[in-house]
Image: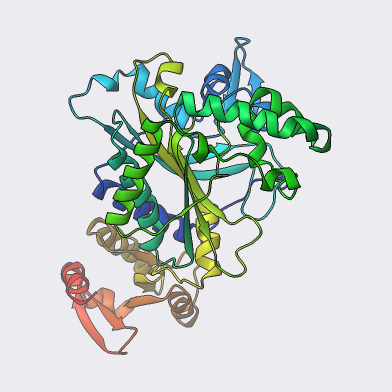
Length: 420
């Protein structure tokens, strides 16, 4: 038996990297005053149809959808924002006196697509959402948080791309211009883009298959269709980023793949050599209107999400070793049945005292037990033999210095706490 295609086992030796990275992401988010939210792994299918958008590739091609025993259509969540907004509405968080409501989440997402390096059918996403503020300063804060998550883990080869998708008026005007531009060459576009041109022409600009088509290079820019309000909003976002010393590039073709985006959109890329053909690390943007679409009051929002798999790939591409301590505090070597029983008690006492401890469970000889301690990179080894049991102490060896001391049983936890 093997894991299903597009999934992976994260085994010891690798899981420690995940734990370290996830802890860093959470700690930094809390520094920005974001609170954790946990939503179900599956939701009613309608949530993603309404929230993500009927015309997106996710809804049309990539969702894991099934009927439950009550004949209800259920979908494994393909992204996090729709679930967070659903919870925001359901629990009436819009009534909280603390606004905006600032949330972060982490967990597995599911999309049925062709597996490739850094793109799995089950992947782990970390994201943040800020709901309840239309201030461009919160846009800049969210982008700053995203950039700092990468920088504080040591990544250097980063590029921030931003764009404005404008308000409804701006998008409608741009939509008409796109249809007029691509209609003459519609037959030359891929089948998906021919459908997108009728349903959501902005998505044509996001096509990977037709990206080199000549019409793409001369497509009308959304920036030329921004209303005065949208243009002023985007100018303020850039001013905040400038004040924060966050470099960026404006790309008018950046549209993102989800229907709910408007105004600010952004992606963070990796320029690291060997990172791979897909350079995007994370992306997000503003989604004013999504709360209303899911049954809530008019509430602006902005957020982003990143793939932890791709984050770990970027760290590897830049040769960054995470400071993970894989050593063991203490290994107890026991010789004989009585010593083994006493060792179990000592190990339990040490663990209760907050000390990482292990003992032999293979009935190995002393030399083999010391080898096991070395493989586990133990800092101290406690030896229990016949003499030690009779005298009521353990021989404690510092594995770095080689020094040994006899420590009575009751004093072992304090001794290790002082010397670790």
